[in-house]
Image 1 (cartoon, rainbow, N blue to C red):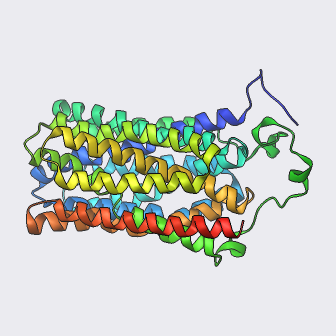
Image 2 (image 1 turned 90 degrees about the horizontal axis):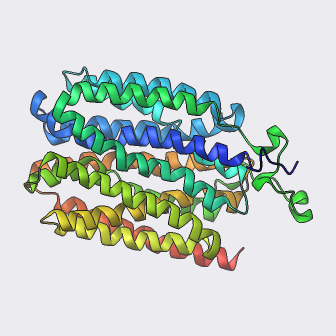
Image 3 (image 1 turned 120 degrees about the vertical axis):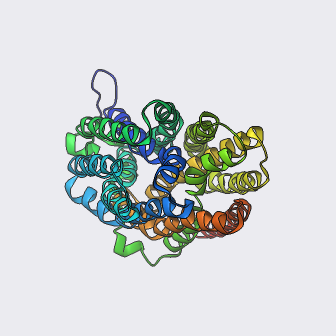
Length: 407
């Protein structure tokens, strides 16, 4: 069972497929900010009205991650991801036809949200199953697909919007992305054991052979590490979508062009790619929790920089720092869960944390839009975001001390 197809461990093909799914789904998701100002102008909506459907979308896909994690453990990732691709095409594509706010609540918020719930958890949990020694690196490579999509797709979408308008661009990007997701789903295999292989492509040590394959969700759900992880990611995820939804509009409010505003979102993607790859590789060497501490400290810096930005230079710095820290922090969660709780039920465990901690992040973009409508500025939203990440930093320190005391 230690072997390879032409010298390449098949787990890396799974990593490539997961990378592709995340590139396409998150590239589509993070392009939404490019469409906000055109949508608001054409339809006469406020910033809060354009942000509310996105908040519903985030809530739906976060809340359903617990179910899709369980489905991945039971049925495997392939049918789960394929179903999600169909829903993403329908939801995002139909969003190009809306005329009323409730219609966007339905198409983007509900249908596309259902589809997005099958992306992050099934992909990263499946990759975690294929690796132990190189788990951080493998998850980092797969996860970087989301940030690379964030880098490339919004810039392409911004250029297309100037030629086609927001409706045609949104429909085209949605259908193209979902079609390629269906192709990538074919290469998502549940775990190495199902095809006669070992994790990492290497025979396990004798101690690994007698070790528990992993704890069930009901065995860990009331433990201190599990609850602390929920609290930590709750604090950092509440504001996490504020830059993705509002940074482009914020840049335009500062007098920048639409293409320059789109570049702010793309810079988040550059930082995300670097952060995901760096955090995964470094965490394999120095540990997950020290790496996580660094990510949250940088995220505090990023939101403070957003609050003080007055031109493109500071916006790019804030976006790069935010992308790096957000990308690194989210990448470490599946690997950390695999380390703490084992491989066997990692999709259900990660999915539950994602659902409980991630669902409240739906409120962030809406509150930021509401604060803008009330004050005419985004400063208060960014300052509150920095404070929440400072709380996540403190709780990560608590978890690290507790884990060191009770390994």
